[in-house]
Length: 308
Image 1 (tube, rainbow, N blue to C red):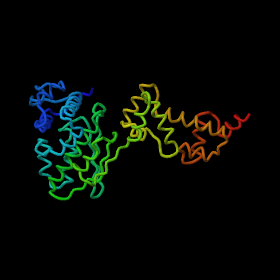
Image 2 (cartoon, one colour):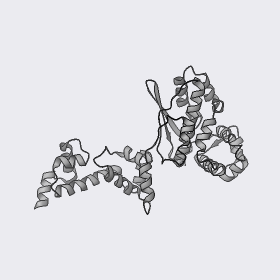
Image 3 (cartoon, rainbow, N blue to C red):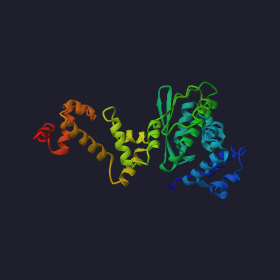
Image 4 (cartoon, rainbow, N blue to C red):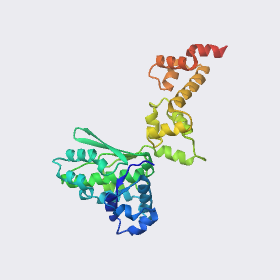
């Protein structure tokens, strides 16, 4: 577990928003979190505490969309000095910049990035590996809080154009329209992959999952570590670590599969241009160089050798 922490004061204020639905003492007992940590002036909660409180809150309230509903009720007054800076910012752009810059004062369990493009802005939230199991809860709460706080600050029109979460589509997705507005386009990058994984008779190894996705998408799109990681619902760093635990790398799996397919197609007398395109090479010359590096033979030499 990481040693990064979230201020207990912020968590306590968030929990108080639940008091109409459940008893805080029952929640802390259920989650196994000490009340002293929450009440201490400089108390802080670990990722393990946050995971336990989130799971217990959802279970005891029976509300799977709890993140959306908490974010909907959150106000700038709950964010201490950061909230005061937000409320006094001269423009919404300045407020978003303040939120991005000083978000470590609220929590260090993830990083946010503000990307500006004309009159639009994109907020990217990246969570630590320890918090990935509650990705949907965290992103939903942050999105709803930013959306509603932003609307209160500008006292006018504010459009949320898109919300993308690297997690399977939840059963409560219709609640997004109510909390975030009818124009929200909610997408999941892994819905199809998640269904296929769920249908497998046994869990795949990370290597097997990577190999399957390479086979499914070979020749249809650029395949690199980041793309495959998104398809699998994890960060590139997590994918690298899991492959390392299996004594392999993404590049080895990718190149090895390309080599196998190239040799199979050469044995079938497939033309070089088709092979290069199928394997994702922009030019046949790039395929020639890669194949020579793999086997020590040019594609044509390999084909002649196979015929003999």
